[in-house]
Structure formats: structure tokens, C-alpha cells
Amino acid sequence: MNISRNNNIDFYHWITQNWLYAGGLITQATAARLLKKSTGRIKQMITEQKIKEYRYENISFVSFTDVNRIAREETFRKINKDVEKELKKLEKGTPKDLKEEDLKTLEILKNTIFEAVKQSENIVKK
Image (cartoon, rainbow, N blue to C red; front, side):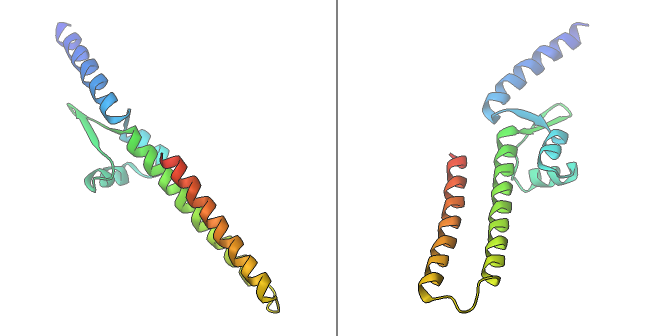
């Protein structure tokens, strides 16, 4: 009984220290669920050093902060891709006989949309 109690105290000490350093700790399975990836892909991301691994005996944890950062980056990549796709649809549907002034306005609108998405991404990174 004392052995397991000491192990629990050791684990408590280990997790509280590493929790603060890592910005939270979650299991690989939880990380996989949050990122909508397989646990195998999470292990690969650890090997690629995209996610930091923390081990206690045979239990593997990963940094919640790393997982959250990756989720945000993937979200903004998807948003940018979707915005670009919609703008291309808009360009295809633009009449060929538009005045030069209207084409310039359309280009300004496109650049403004991309800049707004980029600024929101920078805000979230901070």
C-alpha cells in the first residue's frame, strides 16, 4: 500500500511541475481526438517534434499548448483555403465587360478580405 501511495505522490509532483511547464498535459488519445487525427499520427508528430512529449513511467502525455496551437494553425489554413476558393468562384462569375475601375475595386476587395483573415490569425496567435 505504501508503495502505491508513494507512486501517487511522485506522479502528483511530476504532473504539477510538468503541467505548468507544458501549458497543460493531455493524453495522446485526447490530442488525436481534438485534432481529428489518429493516435499514430500524433506519435509521428511527436517524432517530427511538432508536439512535445512528456513521459511518466509508461504513460505518454503531450502539451495541450502545442495541440491548441496546431488546431488554430490548421483552422486558419482551412479558412484561407476556403476564402481563396470562394474568391475564385467570384472571379469566374465576374462579367468580362467590367470597367477598369470596377476590376480595381474587386481586386481591392479581394486583398482586403485576405488581409482581414491574416490579421485575425495574428490576433489569435498572440
